[in-house]
Length: 265
Image 1 (tube, one colour):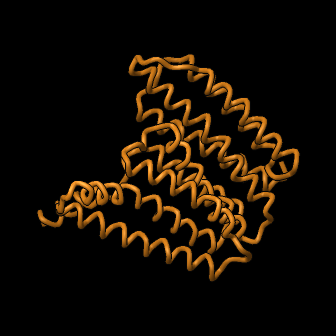
Image 2 (cartoon, rainbow, N blue to C red; image 1 turned 90 degrees about the vertical axis):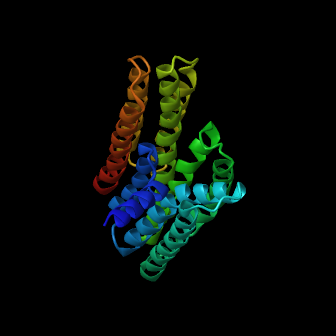
C-alpha cells in the first residue's frame, strides 16, 4: 500500500499543475461554450481541452530530463502521462466530431501556431515571461468557439465568445504580474493594466454592437476594469489569493456572457 501511495503521489506531482490561474483559464472557455451550447460535442471538447492542458507539466518534465540526459522514474511516468493524455484528447475530439452539428475546426487552426510558440517558450524555461503567459490562455480560449460551432451556432457568437475571453485575459494577466511585483516590492506600473482595461471594454462593446456578444458582457468588462483599478490601489494580495480571485472574476465574465446570450441581454 505504501508503494501505491508513493506512486500516486509521484503521478500527482508529475501531472497536476499547481497554478490556480491555469485551471481557471482552462475552465472558463469550456464552461462558456457549454453554457451557450450544451450537449455531447461540448462534453467531448471539454475532455480534449482538459487533457491538453494537463499535458503541459509532464511534457516539461520529460523534455527537461531528456535534454539533461537523465532517466529517472519520473521521466518514464511523465512520458507515459503525455501519451495517455494524448489518447484521452483524441477520444474527446472523436466524440465531438461524431456528435457535432457543424464544422468547428477553424478556431483550432488559429490556436495551433499560438500553442506552438507558447510551448516552445515554456520548454525553454521562459514560461513565466509575459508573452507565454498571454498566449497560453488565449489559445485555450479556442475551446469556447469550438464548442459553440460544434453545437450548431453561428460563427458570430463564436468569435464574440473568444473576443470576450481575450479581453478578460490580457488585463487580468497584467494585473496579476503587477500585483506580484508589488508584493515583492519590485518596480511596477499601473499604466498597462489601466490601458488594456479600456481597450478590453472597447473590444467587448464593439463585439456587442455587431451582435457578436451580449450587452451583459460589456457590463462585465466595465466591472472588471473597475475591479482592476481598485485592486491596484489596495494592499497587494498573496499569489494564492490572486489565483482564486481571478477564477471568480473569470466565472463572472463567463456567466454574464451565457446569461446575456440566452436572455437577449
